[in-house]
Length: 305
Image 1 (cartoon, rainbow, N blue to C red):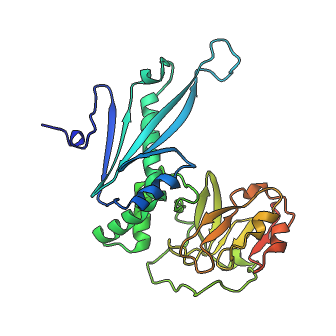
Image 2: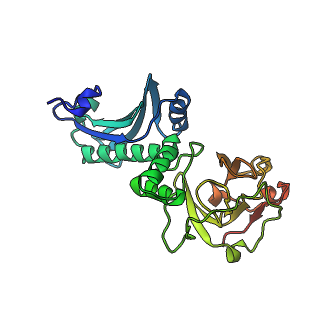
Image 3: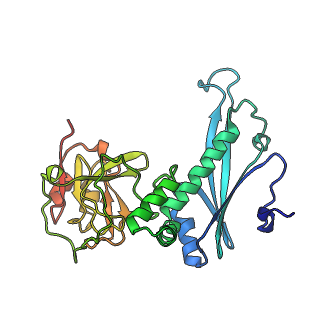
């Protein structure tokens, strides 16, 4: 009997490990396919051919810590995930024998690591690209969930996901006692930016909400509602910006002497559809330059104790 994977042109060979995820969503629009490819360029080595997208993750292994020691060896390993678009979306990966990379038989747990990294790539794709929106819509309909519940369901299904800025970033999971509960009620979205200045007492007036993972650094948030960026609240514990006041003029990015901020997309926010993310918040030198140039006074700098 022909294997289902063989019918799609994937032939599991002896000694190879193959993973196949079939998603009940469509990916046929060339612009959507391109957005998946382009959105992950900062995270993985991306390639595309016809209706297929390839995401490769590379890592290095060393046989000892000291690179100057006698007998030191280093090898670069990789695993590639393939997205096959069409009426359904298949996500496929294969783990090749270690001999493909030379003869580094000293590498420990190669297959286990490759499997883990492949699943990390898959989870990252599903959490950060247009596929996230499609999956959320499917889960909401199939499991009769509201948008917030479907978003949480997707996060539960993708525990290894990394947040990729400017690729439709999604919030990371927070502890239950830290986040403001979302009861699924309708959220009233304002028509435009709310007036400044930022309320410096926001920590006592707003509830903590789901934090945001900026490539390994966790940014705390307060007052964030839902997952569609309608109400973003205040982000940053020491470099604090009320994103519902922020109009994204870019003055803070230009004024900061240590590069604390970088742009990231917030589609759907009525104040502006991009924001200066304090991704390097710990580097702040408390010069107050960004606070002084912000036209709507959306920024407050607190010196870290």
